[in-house]
Image 1 (cartoon, rainbow, N blue to C red):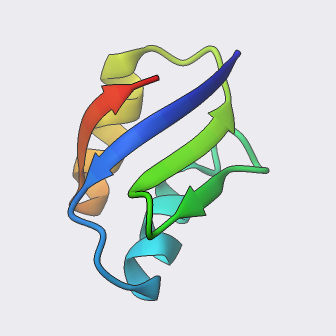
Image 2 (image 1 turned 90 degrees about the vertical axis):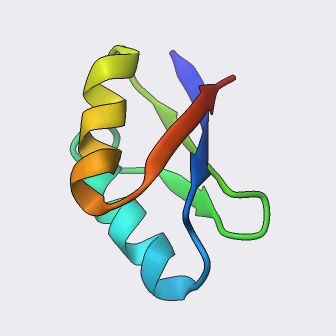
Length: 65
């Protein structure tokens, strides 16, 4: 299922890299958009798993669209 995650705390390209590394296990084709503050991926993972992965990387999951 395609999901767009709204992520708080990204401010630079290093953040994009860290978020991508945190989410690549859920979808190797994850796309992170710094300007929009989002990550788009195709996964059946639940909110808790995605939030935990982002939290471990230092970012906060605000919303899933």
